[in-house]
Amino acid sequence: MLGKYKEKELIYAPLLRNMQLLHPNYSFSFIPIIVGATGYVSHNLKEQLLRLGLQKKSVQRLISKMQEQSVSGTVKIVKKFLKFKLV
Image (cartoon, rainbow, N blue to C red; front, side, top):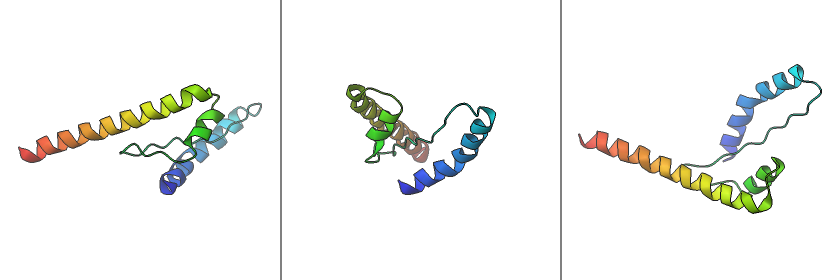
């Protein structure tokens, strides 16, 4: 997960700097949201979502939904690959 965090930081740091230059009266921050293919989330995802202003009661529901979507997408990819492989 640390690798993905660094990867996103490298990708979005220039955007963050440009946004700050375009809108100096606003404050911008980097909040990575990373969900693995098997639904793994970092231990601090809950705190990061709270920084976005989400309510505590909806954060766990949102994390569960993101995990469910991630696993579902992975299953679809695997099924498509297996179908392709068998033909």
